[in-house]
Length: 419
Image 1 (cartoon, rainbow, N blue to C red):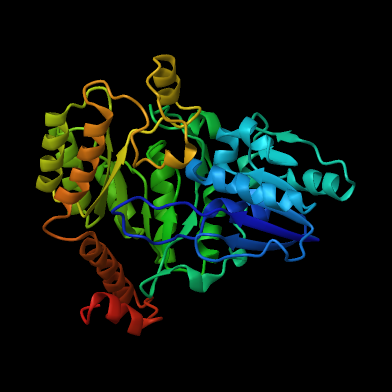
Image 2 (cartoon, rainbow, N blue to C red; image 1 turned 90 degrees about the vertical axis):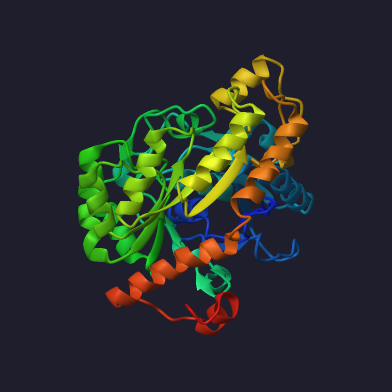
């Protein structure tokens, strides 16, 4: 059976350095497919496809809200040609009812142990409109290595530099943050994978650079330390979302190859300043993630926050505007208050103001968003800051004897002779 799995394109954030990572969700889903399925993966951000190619079944996997309208468009065209289409992925779950109008089937939930049923139904011409497994999560022990063989590897380079592979060591999150949908998608329970299974997957990746995509590793201190301890022999370099800044955790993280972390900078407190310093003291770089437009934010506060970011010596910063994605606390509260004025899902990319802020006009918040990017990178462009992160990981790989000088000519052309 020829199954084409498509990851729809979306428009990147204005001002952000454009690169593409091999998406994790499609490879996880592909690993759960029956053996008789011949899967072809298309990342539409990097390659095109023809609707006229012979395929038996089409899957559309969507992670971002800004992908949904393009996903619907692709599905509509295939269905006009008599090809059945199934949707899955995070934004399918967030937009299930709307997506069902463009689909022969929608899959909601986690894929492990469920794909045999779906494909048996397809082969017997009894495909269900909805496969809802949101409350039937598979045992975490079932989660095996993602099927990274579906990627076209040469597409995932940035200026000749190999990008990271995505892996996960846990699912679910015990937190329920205001702008986040993870509590809806994966439940409020932290579900760590058995450490030996997570390590096995990291070891299998043919890449020395990883992105551990867990929502937060800072959920169980002992598990966190045990994971990092087991990662040390792999000699991989990796980035991740927040980890605990306890000295014993940071020591192990650095030994395990922690390269940089994404750290939410939510205020201008000494707590944040000291937290960033502790990362840096352990030679772990920090990319600050800064959310603008909360109800406590006025113009003076946002300007002070930008100044603070420059003071604390962040290695990179990524600014976003509060975006009320469906099934988040933000969406519920702002919708109840009648403050959401734009429901065009293409605009839900965390760069457009789609609601009325409490202490600013929408127009002024949009201007301050652009000002934040401009001021943070005015003395050193984003590309140069990225080069420094890449240079750091290359130096570590050389010291460990794991550096692979692929496409070195392109790297020199992009970043100069220093690399």
